[in-house]
Image (cartoon, rainbow, N blue to C red; front, top):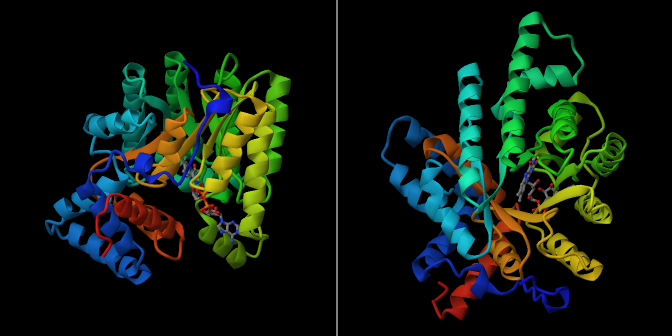
Length: 398
Ligand SMILES: Cc1cc2nc3c(=O)[nH]c(=O)nc-3n(C[C@H](O)[C@H](O)[C@H](O)COP(=O)(O)OP(=O)(O)OC[C@H]3O[C@@H](n4cnc5c(N)ncnc54)[C@H](O)[C@@H]3O)c2cc1C
């Protein structure tokens, strides 16, 4: 039976629920891992050293597989993720299989990535624990090609044909999802290719979101112009009579965006302060809720305040926690206190589950490690929760 909103109990400090799927040994491992990555200098030295060791064939695969890979990735293949998917499912949390191999920018690699994402769509058809599919546009086409289009430069004949192939890949995934009735997220990337990605996403939404929400674009609220884009896209969707799909994130490329803007002498697209990003993020959440009959939203965030805001607003507005237009989402291995407590309270929750061969997902893992240094701030949160749970289980905190 659906929980009544007045009966919903949500407590993000409940570490028992957060770490229910972790044995004492796993918890201990997570503790050491987050302690290690909290050292900025260790990550700085470790990243090139690990790359070097892998490149010259030193047998460190096993170490990586049992530590950082196990924390942040589901497995080496779709089938290899079955255990991790079931574990999340047991905690009422669904999975988004995220093929995280970052290869060279060749047509063969783009085709291979597209084929792999289509396999995730096939897999989702038979597994109700998969709530969304996802792709990153630069996995399907060359970054510089998107950049050239974004800068409104004229493409050569060969480039036009190249873009036609990118379009076909994007369309084949969105159509397969539409045919299967599975939702698909389009990740957002750097600002100087994002207009092109937005145009693509809007076109796909217009085509495939007429009857319900299938395609979701991503809005990075660390940009000062994205709350306005969300509103403009919604107004357009209304005039063209399609549902808007909106994944809300703060944004992952802040430093690079600011550096490029300073270097090239244009106004940074990033908000002046963290607080400004937070305000727009929370405004975007409320805007989506105001129009929830016509917008499918996903709050992709590890921010406790934003999750609390969304959950409370749903409760106050009498929106069912199981409303199919609202999902919370986090990354595998991070903020389990949010995911599992939201899941336990009956909300729709999904985790991005990166997968792929160890060596090929290393760039993804290094980014996670860097984000989790003490400078990034996330580790403080992860570590203090693990310490609290260890104390609750009466394990010693050395
Ligand atoms: C499910 C999911 C999907 C995601 N998909 C994407 C995606 O498609 N594209 C993408 O770019 N990112 C994506 N991200 C990453 C996301 O954008 C954030 O980098 C990350 O989640 C951290 O933000 P937060 O909301 O979780 O929490 P917080 O820790 O509260 O916020 C940190 C974020 O705030 C912003 N910020 C920090 N300091 C400042 C400052 N001084 N001024 C202005 N802003 C500041 C930055 O965006 C920073 O990442 C995704 C994250 C999740 C969980």
